Image (tube, rainbow, N blue to C red; front, side):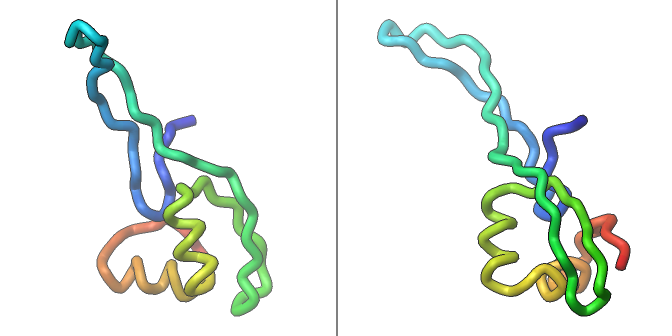
Length: 82
C-alpha cells in the first residue's frame, strides 16, 4: 500500500533531521493521508479513495464530482471511474 494521494499525487519527501550540533541524518516527510468513502450524488455510487488533507479541503469546498472533473480538465489522471 503506497503512501500516495490518489487525487493530488502527494508522495513522501526526503529531508534531514538536524541536531543541535547541526549533525544531519536522513528522514522522510509523509503526507497526511486518510482512507475515506465518498458518495457521488451525480452517479449514485460510493467510491473509496486515499486522499490527503488538502484534497479533503478541496472536496468540501467544491464537491467530489466537481473536484475530480476539475483535475481531469487539468490533465491529471485520477483513476476514478464513475
